[in-house]
Image 1: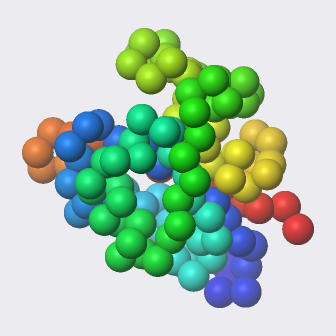
Image 2 (image 1 turned 60 degrees about the vertical axis):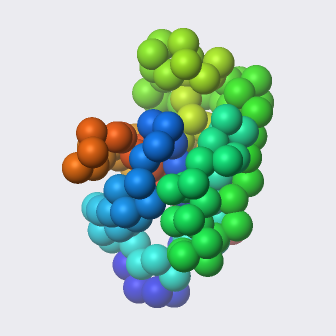
Length: 136
């Protein structure tokens, strides 16, 4: 895809204490897997539980991305292809990254370009990225 390609939204999830570098690497790898350029990212989102997550906020600032944080009860009603009972146990919703990407994109699951890209960083902390195409 060229830089003139579709605009996309990132849905971001991470373990508590995940370093900014792990989140940045996960996003970079997910964008590359989808054949997207960083300039195509128009929105980013996560769960309200992560609104104070230092690594996530640092990544967003460095990337020039304003994040929207959704409460678990809003994320929980978004149909996603990969719901997780483990995620529900800890967050109150079966999906963070997929549901957040779809809400930020204003799209349904057919617009997911990357469903659930997961990276375990050097410190053992996980970052999860989903990418949804923003409908024109």
